[in-house]
Image 1 (cartoon, one colour):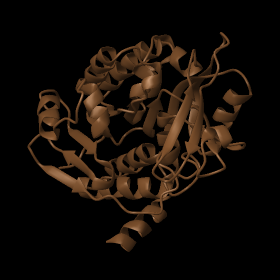
Image 2 (cartoon, one colour; image 1 turned 90 degrees about the horizontal axis):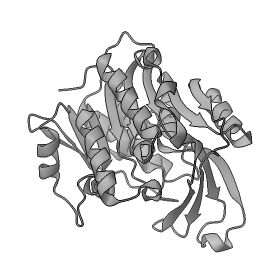
Image 3 (cartoon, helix red, strand yellow; image 1 turned 30 degrees about the horizontal axis):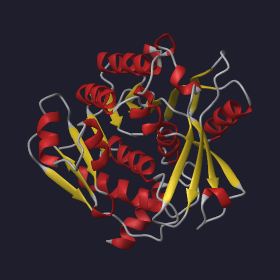
Image 4 (spheres, one colour; image 1 turned 120 degrees about the horizontal axis):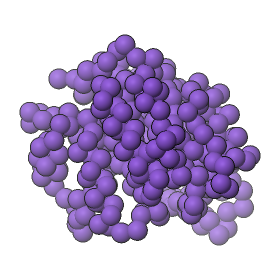
Amino acid sequence: MALTFNQDREYDIIAIGRAAIDLNANEYNRPMEETMTFTKYVGGSPANIAIGSSKLGLKAGFIGKISKDQHGNFIKQYMEEKGIDTSNIVYDTEGHKSGLTFTEILSPEECSILMYRDEVADLYLDSTEVSEDYIKKAKMLLVSGTALAQSPSREAVLQAIQYAKKNDVKVIFELDYRPYTWKSAEETAVYYSLVAELSDVVIGTRDEYDVMENLDSEGDNEKTVQHLFQHNIELVVIKHGVDGSYAYEPDGTVHRGQAYKTKVLKTFGAGDSYASAFLYALVTEKDYETALKFGSASASIVVSKHSSSEAMPTVEEIEQLIRKRS
C-alpha cells in the first residue's frame, strides 16, 4: 500500500510552525565556551523540512510568524530564494524576536543545542492568521510538535489541522520534541497525543514517542502502533538512529529501512532531512520501502555536513548514495 494524495493541488506540502536562526559552531571538537565563531543559517524543523522538500523539487509553502527585524528578513528572504512560497508568513508586530539556536560540536557523537526561545515570534502565530483557502491548496500539511508548546501557536496549529481535514489534505505530524518551551511532561503528552490521533502520518524517534506516551523508559513499538491505529492514522514511522527506521501500516505490515553509515560531523538536522525526503518519496508515489531508503539516505548526507537547511540534498544525491550502498 501507499498513501494517496489529492493530486489536483497547487502545493505538494505546506508546513506550519517554527522558522528561526541556527548559529552553527565553526570550531569543531571543543565546548561552546571555547567556540568563537558561528555560521548563520535558517533553522527550525518545519522550515528545514519545507526547504528540503523544495530542494527535492516539490512545491512548498509555509505558514508562520517571524520577527520584524533583520533576522526575520533573513529567514523570509532565504526561504524565498529556495523557492518556498512565503505569502502566509507574517511579521510579528509586538516586539517578539525570532528564536536563536546555537550548536556545539564536541565530537561527531557529542553535539548539543542551546536554544533561546523565550517569547519567540513563531509561538505567537494566531489562529486568525491561518488561512483555509491557503491550506486547501496543498496535498499535505506538515505540523511539528514544537508549535504545540504554547498558545496561541497551539490553537493556530489545531485550526490548520481542522482546515486540512475538512479539505482532504493529509496531515503529517513530525514529533520534533524540544523540551525548552514545555511546562511539564503531562502537558506535552496530552497535546502530542491529541495531534497524533488527528494525523494521517506520524514520524518521530523512539525517544519522541516515549515523550508522547509519557514513559520513563523506552517504549514498545507494537504497543505504540496498536494504540495509534485505533484512530484513522495511515502510517506510523518510528526511527531508531543507527538501527534504522520502521514504517507500520494499520493492517500489520511492517517495513524496515536501514541506516546509511557516513562520516558524521554532527548529529542535528538528521530528522528534518529524513522527513523531507521520506515525504518527497510518498508524494511522488514511491512505495514505503523506497521512502524509508530516501529518508535514511538524506539524513546520512546532512549529518556529514555543517548546516541543516543549506545541506539538504537533491534527489540525485540521495539516489546516488542509495545505489552506492545497495
